[in-house]
Length: 115
Length: 110
Image (cartoon, rainbow over all chains, first blue to last red; front, side, top):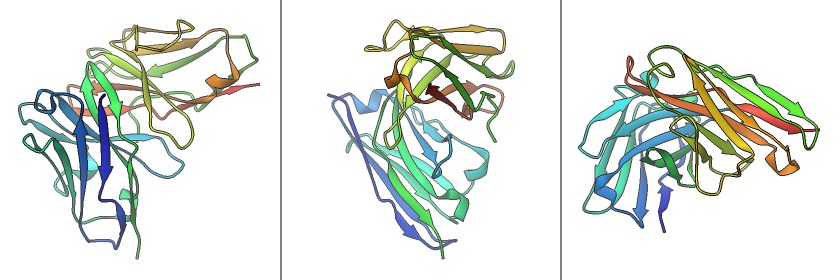
């Protein structure tokens, strides 16, 4: 069955960096576009970034230039490199698979940016 | 800031119907497919509607959706206590090349 498992979250000071990972299994990873979506505590969903099956990348404006999405098709892993972190970047980060829509989601990894 | 606009909350008695609106623009809802997601507290979102009006596997027929112009609507009939959740619309914006979600609507069963 399709499985997505995020990791790499933690508590980090403003201005520092963090790398999130999303390990995928149960489907042909290289054939799918993949997304990161985040959710601040008590808030709604916010789309963050996408990497297409053929490597195109797009970002929401607030993270452009600070976050980098990438994928390792040989290791079936999606990444999100977070740099120059701000308190407003805090939240639960989900990876999601796209197949017509975001049909499978992981359980999320929590990022807390605080001094 | 969400560029898709949803009401913060809707409510109705068990067995009744609720509708949730999602308003966007020509560059997102007006030209791209809309999806709907259901999220219970402490859990990951779940896709319930894709391509504007198609129910995901396992989504009851009590859930329906439509799109017209730059707006979309999710309807839930025969409301059950288990339908209490947050519901989000989503669409790609081809002008900005970003994905976007609505702010979310909390459904309360009275």
